[in-house]
Length: 89
Image (cartoon, rainbow, N blue to C red; front, side, top):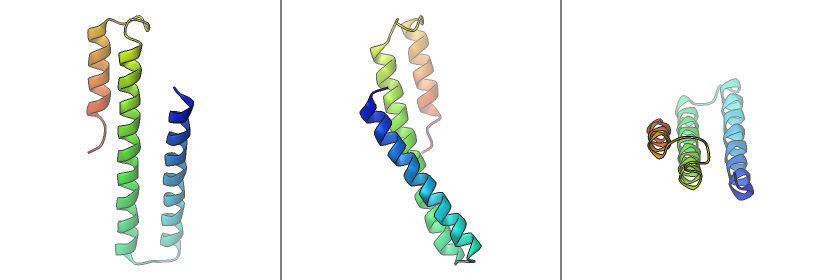
């Protein structure tokens, strides 16, 4: 994985972690359910976005390493489709 990709992914994951800790604090403080749901929805979107980014990276790596991982092109394509199909919508 390229360093710029690792940096971006780690930034996104740290942001998600911070959001989760914020929601824990909101629950502990007994904040309004609507506010908590709003923040949960924000985390869900952040996770979906990170998942899409990771799927794109996976696709690019598969395309660049075809044959280098000891797998036939069709097997790599099937693996790529399987992983991408699991990305949350």
